[in-house]
Image 1 (cartoon, rainbow, N blue to C red):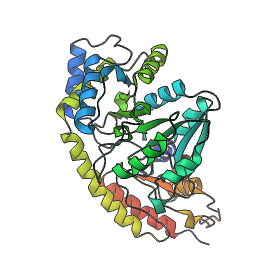
Image 2 (image 1 turned 120 degrees about the vertical axis):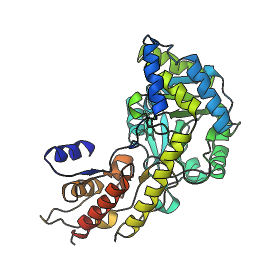
Image 3 (image 1 turned 180 degrees about the vertical axis):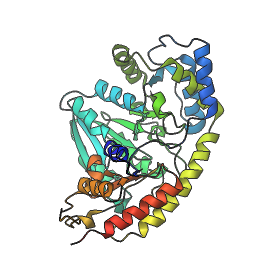
Image 4 (image 1 turned 90 degrees about the vertical axis):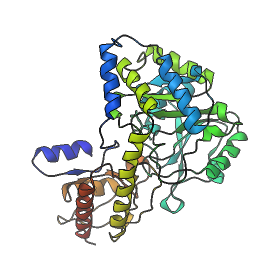
Length: 381
Ligand code: PMP
């Protein structure tokens, strides 16, 4: 959708993009300065495959301070982004035929990575009524003797849902009964959370060794292009990731790593500023979405997305008589007629929804929602 939107924009059409998954802020100045300094100091050679020890130490300290979790640097592997970390973990853990449980809606790449590793994705469906969160009973029912891995994000892309401490405790109880299942906890949106404090499923000692925390710098520090992420996991899993990475990427960019140390040293002021803007926009978009007939929405607790239900428009026709059959059709219609780029929910495993990112200015959001309302209002039975 982002690509199609750019094509329309190149024809002179004013397209508002609500389809991208990155903060619309710049990397903080002190982080950029640290990168410039790293260049001047000639941090330009290969780094250790799992990352510079002082960056890994900074991550260990972050995990202690912000998450109250104890790790040793041998348990941290830095990579070229959370995406690379997810891929490393899946490629090292999954053998052909292994089952990976993924709650839907999920981030697009999860199931594709499982396919690449010749594993089998097993989906647990969730809907807006449960705030897109699974219950322990749903989890239990999805587990089979072939289940190797469970993976989820909280805060979630695409729904913005956040699992509370109690909800995670209930899921951890299920995993306690199944000692062969690993858990990927994708916490990349940790700091973009408007509700209760972030909780990690790694906090439960009985399962901690089987939890792989995936996190990074892209969202918290507006560093999507720097390609910097990491895992915190058991020593065995960390060693396997190190080994894989040693034969593939050799680890991530030396300069980005030095900048990452500075991001953690300087703390969360820049994140909190971003979060304030996101909180205001979240309310703005929520109010505007509620004002569109046929659209059902919840108020997501984290990340910067809405995932409204739009199936009431299926079967309706546009001005040329074309029928909107699914979420992809609707997203295309909104792009072509409303000039707003969104993403159909089918990409995230649930066709009855679309994803809107509110990482855009207040004015663009107001105008985008006005256009969406107008375009949807033109569809006829
Ligand atoms: N996990 C989720 C849920 C994401 O939304 C993203 C980025 N869109 C990533 C991982 C990957 O982040 P990175 O830029 O660190 O690779």
